[in-house]
Image (cartoon, rainbow, N blue to C red):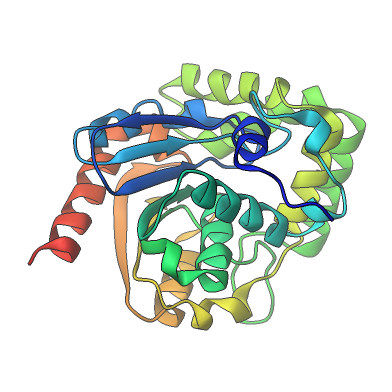
Length: 274
């Protein structure tokens, strides 16, 4: 198998670079989204960091022809893409900011190549979405199977139903509309595949292997990643910090960007102080 060149990687993942700093801060978006979901957060760090934004293969302006169902059948495929991007932009000791499923992608990437990562900031993370004994993931197995069947048979209907539930913040309906539109811009076949990869994955056993310091930003009233999930991860990730946000729903990067920025800055100031 031929290794992708730097230019191949930048095109494949529609990589965008900005900012003035020497240290890289890379932002990874969640399911059904693209890098524009960080537009209210990433610019706040451009004076201090080199900002790297990208789209997962199948999302936004990525190269759809690069989609490989086998590679992306596990989150390890997406983790390899993050590693490829960091190598392509010449990054070391970066700050990784991952939302939702991409938080777990960042953990897997940092376990595989720890030298690339200085700190992880995990927004609404979950290692497994399915309840299992004492573990509360938020969904029963049959709930996930029904949701995936609904997605496969009626993707537009699924998008309009799930976007408000995921976003929360019923007082700001435009946010749910934006998320629904983002879902609808994603290729339905790839979205269905990524949904299975996301919601059927179980990476609880990997948490203890992470050596990179991490901040867990846990939203309130999050139907995708309940409070118990964030606290479960915090208890099993050495060197992690946990913040219960006032923000509700699953997408504080859109619904509460100021709080998200403030908590990121507070953590980084404390961690990086002499």
